[in-house]
Length: 271
Ligand code: DGL
Image 1: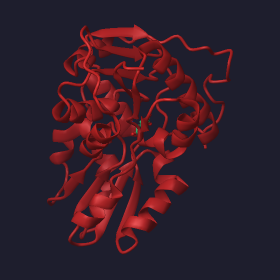
Image 2 (image 1 turned 60 degrees about the horizontal axis):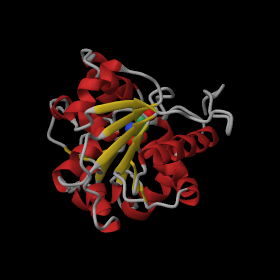
Image 3 (image 1 turned 90 degrees about the horizontal axis):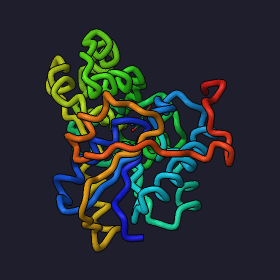
Image 4 (image 1 turned 60 degrees about the vertical axis):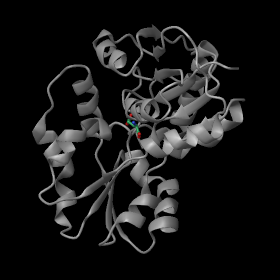
């Protein structure tokens, strides 16, 4: 297939990766798919999430004719990458928390990983920390309410600064902390708000630029197609159209899922 590069997330978070791709690969044609009907992913059970990610991505790859899939979601990548690669015949690029560059950058050796509950607790994440930041002190902090804040903000609602401050407060208990990994693609979209939050300077690191570089290595030539670029949603959300348009997705369509093929309805329990 020589269709667009398809960027996938549970919601609007993948737009932070789209921004990096647009900066680094301005000529590339992109499509976007988000599973807004089942957002958030960060509190869902692993087995359900794997089945759901495969169902959504298979349907979106078929609908868009994508030439590659970018899983712009740490929560999905740290559990479903293997299944996605097994099921799809196109290249799949994933997103994992930027622990390695953060460990290299930190002077104090005190890092924090800010991500969803699922990501901070995954064996994949523990291994990543052991492998690349074994010599560092790493605080793993779940900040699921920031996902909802980002979604609301991009849909035009105001932010709740108290919620944001409460999510970040545990970070500042470590006086030596100098580097924070944004291990959820939603969080870089809160850029200025996060930048204003710390009581002392810290460096925030996300994975967007590294993913864009990886895509350029894996997909050659890049697809450059005429016509509008499309965002696919699993549930209608007119309030998201302006944000999607700002990131280059002028056309918004609903993705039809074959619910009968797999049980991808909402899970009854959380982990
Ligand atoms: N944007 C996603 C990530 O990078 C997760 C948000 C969610 O909980 O749905 O982990």
